[in-house]
Image (cartoon, rainbow, N blue to C red; front, top):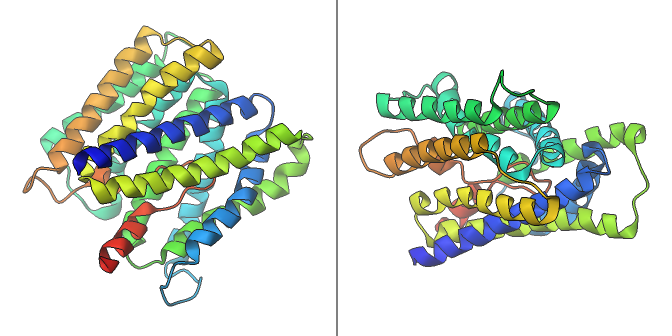
Length: 315
């Protein structure tokens, strides 16, 4: 049973990594604004088909409009930043910085959710953030806009996840999904005229692949959590660094420097420590990593936690 969950998770993150490769290819030619606009446009039918099965009664007005607005803004910034980072940075380096997001969730849960972080978990977070500094090498190498974009994506992705934890049980999943998607379409559409470049059919197909892969990977991730414990499935996200290394070398002639290897190892080690500590009963009421089951920064991303909850209720 657990093996099936692991295999589903590895498949999901392999698809996500391939999704990011397509972003990197297109990002070398087109603005993130254009890529996000068209990928959001092609995501609407996919999300609509999924939402046809939502039997929850109610309307599309949010219960917490200001929190929804803030989360929507965070999602917009996350997508713009992540798409740009993937376009200009080596894949492995981008992932290394984005892997700091679960650590930031742990920190943000203190002021926003009133959670307490003990000595062990606090030390793991500090160690993980030190790993980010190792990757960035401030002072020894010039920090680019791409590095700042990756950091921004990690920070605002963490903030968006914390907001979902705060209001997620009271808001319909359709509200949490559609508002950011509609905002992407409207905001990027309003900016499109400033950056638009004509796209051949092959590149339009690539946009469709981004949306499709983001959607399909999310379905595999749902299957993974339905067939395996969160403590086993969650660490599988780090397999993306393997795909990033392979894709980066084969497709983009990228190599990983020593700082990225060391920093990534530190970040992953601290993240794994938090995950496994959360999985042990009686340790803490905080579960920031295990509750953060969705992978953001995709045009077709959706919150799988609500779908899992609905599946359990049906079962």
